Structures are given as structure tokens and as C-alpha cells.
Image 1 (tube, rainbow, N blue to C red):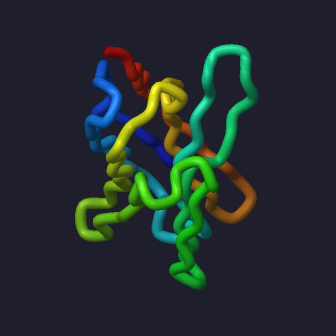
Image 2 (image 1 turned 90 degrees about the vertical axis):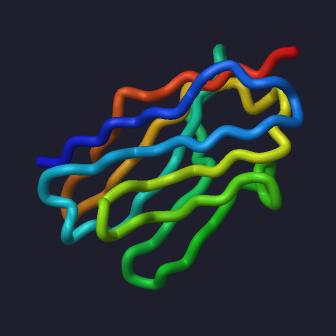
Length: 116
């Protein structure tokens, strides 16, 4: 069982920054990948950024390349998403996702609202 708890969302002005955190607990030692997804109102959930355990490869959605940075503190078992140069279209609920053999776990989500 894996538990994921996101934090760090809130209201931010366009051009501002936020750092989302995802604290992971439980059986995460065999993880394959850890990811950030987001879901805007009326839209499907989409992948924002991903870290692979096997290759250490990091990928970003085209919409956030150069603005968002995914990282992981292995000692604390925390996944981060640094969001810079935030745009109104970044408004969404952001979800942390952890993939282990045979299962995919999700956090409860944290709301990011971009508005002036």
C-alpha cells in the first residue's frame, strides 16, 4: 500500500511561482515511476511531468517545458513540482501518482488557481 499526500497548491498570479510537494509513505521502494498529473475543469487528466526509477529519465508535457521542474528527495521520499512563470492555463487540480509493480496510486490532489 502506498499513500500520497500533496500540498503546496493555492492562488497565484500569472508569472508567479509555486512548489507542490507529494509526501509518499508505505511500500514505495519498488517504484517504477513517479508523476505529476493535472486536471482542469471540463478536461481530461493529463501528464505534466514524470521521473522514471529505472532510467532516471525525466519527461515534461510540452505545455510546461522550461517552466516546471520535477524532482525527488529520496531520503525524505518526497516528490516536488516547481512551477515557475505560471500561466492562467495552468489552473487545475494537480495529482501525484506513484507506479509500483501491478498498481498505480494517486493522491487526493491539490488545487492550483492562477488569477490576477
